[in-house]
Image 1 (cartoon, rainbow, N blue to C red):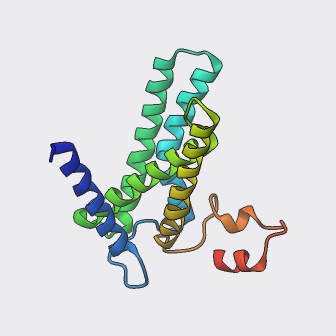
Image 2 (image 1 turned 135 degrees about the vertical axis):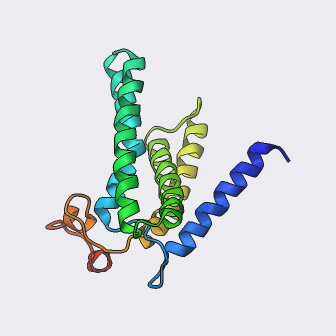
Length: 177
């Protein structure tokens, strides 16, 4: 086996350990405190990609877009790391495991969401396959990420606030609180 395969396998094992330790009522780490923490974590990769896409779309200098996107993502990453450190009792080991879980999950989710909206492929069949694979991964990762949220509230990114006043089945609305 080559080094890349070993490192990828080790990273997957670390993420799985973080999911196990952050799941359920007897969790030993806090991966996502609430939906605001979840949203802020998802903004780390999404803001960088969004700014780069915006700069390319507007025909501006892509190098400036890359630099600005990286700077904003880095600032958000520092904010997420500080919040995670405080939430996990200022314990370096628990903070590192929580960050090693939440950041890859957010990156995978955002990349698959982008892939679902704008699938790659030269033919319609390739794009359909790419979109389908992204949707399957989103269907697997979304409930896992949802189970890692400790408190089902938030002032900015709460799904319950998004659907307030809309016609949504009571089963969905009951499980958001």
